[in-house]
Every structure is written in C-alpha cells, then in structure tokens.
Length: 607
Image (tube, rainbow, N blue to C red; front, side, top):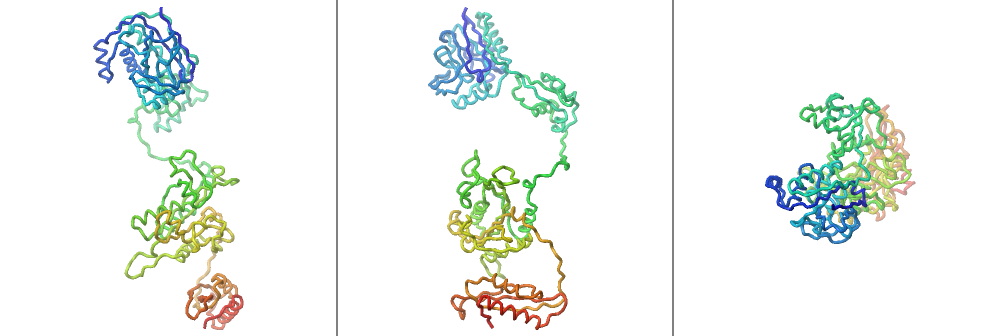
C-alpha cells in the first residue's frame, strides 16, 4: 500500500489540503466523449488523469492537480513558502520564485506553485502509474499576487484568485477518483488525507426587511424574502429584532460579504424587470442642520451672480495641484499621501496658480481680453484652529479675479484702452460696495507677506478696519514668464471667509434732496510724498454737514509744476435737504478747507 503524508506550514494561505493516492493507473488516452467535451470548451486533451482533473474543474469549479507519486521524495508533501530560486513549470518555462509565494514541496524541493501551475519535476507522463490527486483551498489574495508577479494565468489560478468553495474539496477529490478508476483502473485505499486545522465558519449577516425594501424600491413581503434565501440554500433564523433575520452564507458564495449583497440577491431573484422604477426623492428636513464650517458661504452665489452679470467669466479648476505651483504662494502646504501623480499631489493653498494656467491657456487660444474669476476652497496647514472639518487643516473660501487686455471690446466708437491698475481698483471697489464692506482702505503690500513675491510695486493690500481681506495689483513679469503669459495681468485675491465674518452695517435710508447741489473744484500743488487720501480726509474733516462728496478729478505733473511736486484736483459737492444753499454758506466751507490743506501739507492753491 502506497501512502503519503501532508503538512501545512502556513494555514493562513492554505486553510485546507486534501489528497489521495491511486495505484496502478493505466495511463492512456481519454475516451472520445471526454476528449470531445474538453475540445468543445477550449481545452487540449493530454492523458486520462490530466483530462479528468480538467473535466472536474470545469464541471464543479474546483481546481485539482495530479502529481507522479514516484517523483515525490520520501512521499512527503509540505505546503510552505520562503523560496527564492528558479523553478521550471509544466510549460517548460523557468520562473523566479519569491519568498512570499506559496509552494507545494516534497521532502527536498518545490514540486508545484500552489494554485497556479505544477512543476516539471512531478509531471504526469505516459510512464506514470502511481498518482497523487490534490484538492485544496488557497487564500485568494495570495494566489492573485503570485499569478500577477509571475505573469501566469492558468485555469486554476483564475478560479482560486476569485475564491472557491472550501467545502467542496473532498467532493471534487472523490469525483475525480471515481472517474479515473472507472476509465483507467487503479486501486485506492481508505487512507484519505484531509488537513483542515481551522475550519472556516460560514458568515452570518443580519438582513433588515425594511432596509431591503427601501433600497430595492419595491414592497416585497418579509415571507417572500425569507423564502428566497431558503431557495438559494441559505440558512435563516429570526433575530432578536423581529424586523430582521440572520442569514448564514454558505462558503460556496464567496461573493457575499455584507447586507447589501443579500439585498442584491433578493432583487436578482425577484427580477429587475419586475421592479417599477421610482424617481421621487425623499428629503428629511427634520435632521439637524449642517455645521457652519461645512456650509457654503452665503456670499458665494451672490458674488458669482454679480460678477457674471457684470461681464466676467467663471472658471472651474482642480483643487489639487503640483508642489511647484503651491510653492508660488506658500512655503507650507498640505501633501496627499497617495497621489495619482506629482501633478496632483498637493491641496492648493491658493487658487492663483490655477487661474494663471487658465489665463495662459486662453491667451494661447487667441482670447486676449479676459475678465475671469473663480471662487472655491483653499487648504492651509494650521494648528489650533476651531471649527475645522479635518484637524490641522484650515479650509478657506477664496475669490480670485484676473484682468488682462482692453477694458472694452474693439469697436469704432471707443478707442482701445488697456486695463490698468485703476480699472482694477474701481472694479474691486464696486464689488466691495456690493458686499457692503465698511471702512475700507488700501496699503502697500508689506515685506513680511509671501504675496510680495507675486505682485509688483503697482499693487496694494486691502483692509477693512485693521483686518486684511485680500490683495490686488499687477503680477510680476518673472511669475508671468513661468506660465508663458506675455501680456500685463492684474489679479485681485479676496479671502471670503474673513469677509463673511466682517460685521455689515445696517442700511439707512437717506432721502434725495429736492434742492440743487453746488459743485466747486479745488486744485492744489503738493509734494510728491503726500497722498490724495491724506488730503481728501482733511477736506472731509473740515467740511460741514453740507459737504456731501469729495472725489479726485485730475492729477498733473509736468510743465509749470516743480520737479518734486504734482497738481491734484478735487471736486466738492455741497447740498442740503432743507433749503437751497447760498454762495456764502458754501464759501465758508471752502475757505476753511483751503486754509487747512495749505497749512497741513504746505500746499499751494492753483488759481
């Protein structure tokens, strides 16, 4: 009596291994019915033993493998890994093994790559008489990894890597044994090998009837769903909760992992064609409101509508950029752990790089007059921040507006005029007026901000009270060159998160005066180091309540003006809601204003 011993060294990768020795098999060609069956399903007949194992595989889905008993050293089989060597498989090709590949070995050497392909050194030949039939269950992910690493896809690996039925191993072994003895003779003893140290317990999943009805969208009775599981061969029992059952999944159904898979089984048996579609949406308005940091800013849509209605074009760009683009505006930024590539590896700390790329693309396409904007989230690394969705990340809403080209489309009635800083300043002032941002002022960009590397001297930082809310101005040429932009570009960047926290003053109604207004122009010659803002503030402070507005209408440098000075003109508007003003009342204010400006700024009034 020929016997064999089996040992599993790695039961995690091979939970079950069954085998049987068949003696004195008459090796011959398979009968024609078996050869024709294999030919019809695309398999090439070889000999009776190999053909039977292939037939059983295709019949019940359990891969088998046959070894020549006489080639197995000391008649011992070990299932183990840890080999780093060359190995010749049944297709006469040399394969490089790695230590994590599971192997079937005898007492001295590997004889098969588990679940993938047998070895040449234990092949069934025409001279084989004594054979060992293997029927095993292998870990699907292990076989998949081995198959991909070696570049070998066999009929066995195709099944194993998708999952087989651990409970069918012995049945497949008995079926193959019966066929071989019937077709080729042989002798079998009762010493069957079945190594199964830790039996796999079938999964038990709770199935909720109401949940199934909600997902399927059909009113299926509980009894019908329970009968479907019994029809499929699943054991069921009522759970503690009367509204659900516990379904035990047979090991053969390796495709079922969770409740949703059971719901799919019910829908499949009911037949999808029998389920009437329902496209109605049910919204539960009783749920708690979203946290404030997850809500979109109320300003967002208002600003978008305002800009679109005023001739701007909205952009929509990715919020993931490359490190070089992120470094344009910030020294620190948030990297993604598993990016698709370096070009999409950083959560953008600013939208400016994305907008610059959009401007560059439009210019290359011949679109030279651009007023583009985008409002979206930016992501900054920030510790100790409250109300953040993810700890250590400050999500802020940002608005970026880009201007380049001419102020108006080309036409015969209006001369071409390129956009300049004052056009940008006026547009942003109108936008901030629309948002009703109070007490605004602009200052030169300070040296301690990273935006100094982006904007040139023709730029300013925007404040409300003492809070910075953004920047606007012309982009430096060296930055434009990086994006192949060959035209002057002006950009405004507003922090909408900060702006949304600014207290908005209450609107008060002021009646329109029914009396005529009086306008006066005052032109002063002042030193270059004196700003219009300083002079305007003095004018407003010295004027009485009849002074309604002060605006600059002219600035002149050149002939008849000293080198270090310039001429600036202010238009003053006087009005009253109570009466028609007299020249004397207006002149009293004018005199005080002139005296104060001349005294405070050493100014000279141009007559």
